[in-house]
Length: 216
Image (cartoon, rainbow, N blue to C red):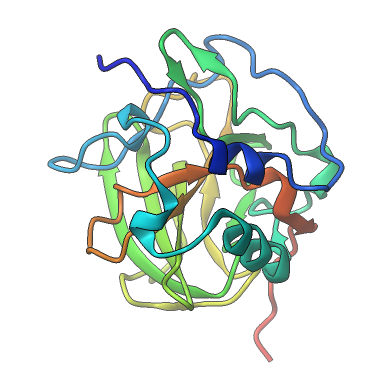
C-alpha cells in the first residue's frame, strides 16, 4: 500500500470554504474503502492531491464552480446538515477522501448534479458503482456500494439533480449491517481516466436536500 502524501495547500483552501459543516469522525472500520473496477486502480490509493493546475483550474475557481452548483445530497430524504464530514477520516495510512451517507437499504441514490453517466462498474471493493461526469466536464462523482442500479441506467445517459441512479446497499466491502452510500468528488483531468482525479471534499458544497426528481 502506498503512503499518501500530505494534502497540498490548494486542497486545504477548498476544505476551508466558508460554509458551516457538521464534522463527525467516521468510525474506524465502518466503511472499508471502495474503488473502481479492474483494471483501473482504487482512487483512494492515489496520492492526495496533485497540483490543481494539472487540471487547468485554480483552487479558488474550483470552490467557486462547486458553490454555484448547489449540489444535492445524493440520498433521498437526507438534508445537508445530516451528512457528517468523513472526508479526512483516516484508515491506517489512507485518508477516506469521501463521504459516507447512512440510509436504509433500498433508499434511492440520486445524481448530485447535472451531467451524464460516465461509467457503470462492479467490483469487489465498491460493489455496484456509478461514475458521473458533470455537464462542464470538470468533476467526476463516484457512487459506491449500491444495492442495485436504477432500471435502464446506461453509460452516456443524461442526468439532472435528483435523478435516481441506484439504491443504497452494502455491495462490495461495505459492512453488511451498515447500508450507506460512499460518495466521492474528483477533479477530472480530462484525459478519459475517470478514476484518476484529485479528491475534493463535497461536504461544504452540499446545498440541497436529496429529493427524487419527477420528470415534467
